Length: 506
Image (cartoon, rainbow, N blue to C red):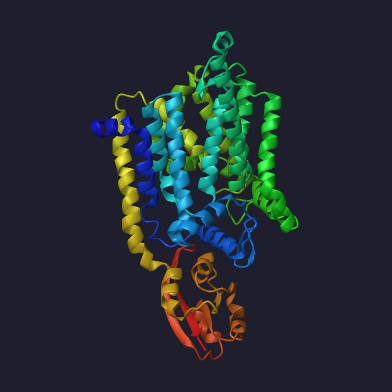
């Protein structure tokens, strides 16, 4: 194990790229889009192409205003190359996750060593939560990448002196007679400044205002450790103007086309409402519920960052005694802490909300353990176990589970009867995956509704496909069509259901 560990750490960037692509691309062509948000994001990107509208996302013929546009643009680029399919919908997330791990390698090498960088990237990639969400077709991984890039560039930006991307004491810069070095230091600072504020903007365009939390960490650092961090006011104001301009380049046209609805839904409902109230039962209402769930993320962390999380509390205790002399560790710890505290204050709770903190936690923890004598054996046992787990899950269980999914079974049973002109109505089972699947062929929107209005759909002229729970078919009048029964697993409710598709082609 020590030999393999040495080989991996000797070429950390190559090791992490290969590991990331192996873990995150494996099986992405096997499992259909199952999560509701996966289907919504993926279909919205396809409808942007169909409409030629790259500003406002649409889903099933209606505005989808819950998230900004960046992830849709990334999926569109993937569709242009590979076509609109499950694999290409997930590809941007897999690439963003791998890029985040690679960013940790380079950052770890700057603040510690190549071994630390590899450890950080590998622990991030093989943490349980990232293995699960690191490939899904949503905006989370784009946010995590730009959040980490902002944290990385923010660290360099707040250094008293910077040369070629590395720290240089201020007093050395002041006494150095070489104008070339001074110019290089200034140029390096300008580059980091630009990267930071562009990363803030792109992080916002990926998911929203949580992308600005690295700036909060920098401000706190300058307030608490004035001798170790610098953040000039005018420089910050100018940077935020750049950030605002990038956001406005998309945001103003989006607000104009939706008559302000993008702000009302994206910021009011998705941000403010989730902060002050429980959304879709993801939390416990009332003040008592808020108090009870306040430690939610501090507990779920041990599952999300498994198997690396078990040693984190001990590392925190040891580091806390020496934190005054560790500026990089203090900065990383602060960024992670701000994320956990902010989302602990938010009433709506979902485990992936704190995922942007995981890269900096991985780097912080890697710095704490990189010098441990027993590290190679301890690390390699867990690393190998998580790699095997991920591959068995994606290449083994995904293959077996694929035949169980209800939407996929319905599609396979009805595909031969579906043409671009077919009208599709689904009642009583209204998952977004139905829209993603059927609209790969049909040009009409998919009608989704309650069982009680299913009979109204029968007034449509053929060709059409009507889908509803088998138990409700008896309530329909004579349909004079082909009946197709399917059974499968409803992943959202995680229970087996029976559906009947009534097909009329003429």
